[in-house]
Length: 84
Image (cartoon, rainbow, N blue to C red):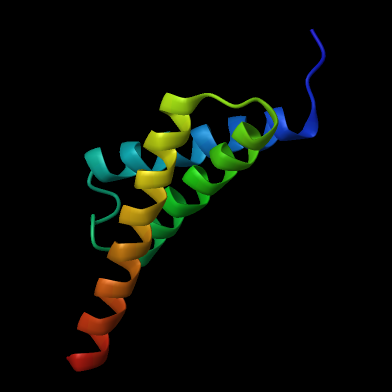
């Protein structure tokens, strides 16, 4: 089995997403913390990059929504910090 660069991008994206979740569950990062949100956004983006080359509709839908929610959280947190 040959592993292409986009496969590695997707694998790194999965690791980032799972690491962010682990850090959240182990209380090492807060859910509204920027590093947590950025890890989720980057992870979802990298998985989406891999899906451009090996398309899977259900994974594409999930990662698109995951990225949108992450961006929403980043924008919301930024507005909250700015108003404080």
